[in-house]
Picture 1 (cartoon, rainbow, N blue to C red):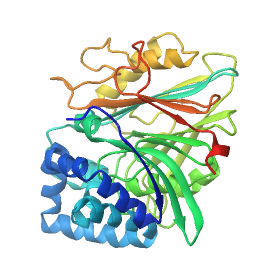
Picture 2: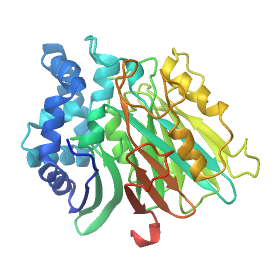
Picture 3: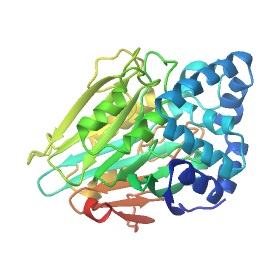
Picture 4: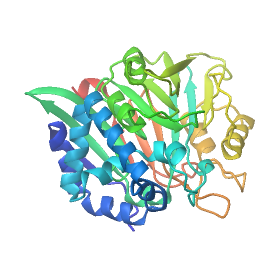
Length: 374
């Protein structure tokens, strides 16, 4: 398997960009769907039932009405990859099927999914560091997309993001032309709704120009969101505040709680962590032991005051059962696919393929200067 993250630069309509992604990464997408335990053992078996097919078709109809442009994007990706549209749509319903709809017991437990995030907001250091934790296959088959969406000669969107094979951009980490940065933590909510899949909401988020627009998009009035998540948001334009946006599914519209990390000279006040549990929203769900172990370990380490400190925390492997930087082992079915360090003051995203605590150079570096991306 490849051990790299190729980057596709693409421009066109929603369908055209999707087609470009699908045709460029056809081999990666097909290999992932043929090899993924989640897809083969949970998603497809669910879709192959009458109940599952009916439910997916219902959600397809709702999604096409809610976000027709991203529906077109998935259609383009499917055609480019030479795969049935339904297969890629189901692939973009991983969270819904895995956490709510399927009655199958997957090889990976619900504790195996998730990510870790470190916030630092000091006057001289403004960093959001993020471990993207998922199936180990993503480490070998994932890719980055730098896309410019043009409809009727108007630039609708411009963004850069890591993609799971066959998945919509926005579901992991990335940034856009407005200078907003994003990463996602999976959070298990009490319920899973029959409405717009979360991947489509996080894809729509990539068009936001400020935190208020992020809030409006994720609230999705009239439709809501299907699963819980936390969205880590920063800005290279206004670096005074960073935001942790916890989201809970609710009928008709999502319920949000936004925790602000303000600039401070006090290391304690300028630092925040988020893993895979609700921290600032009063939601009663059982906290996964793995998430709790990672959060406890991060909070026990010296308070981070620079990007290197964030890398050291995200690369920590002291807890042998539940390390922050994850590799597949008897006690863990998932792995850290990569680590992203958003340096908001220097307007750069560094992506580390291996353990970021080591004295290594990033695999990729992206310029996040919003003025250069318009």
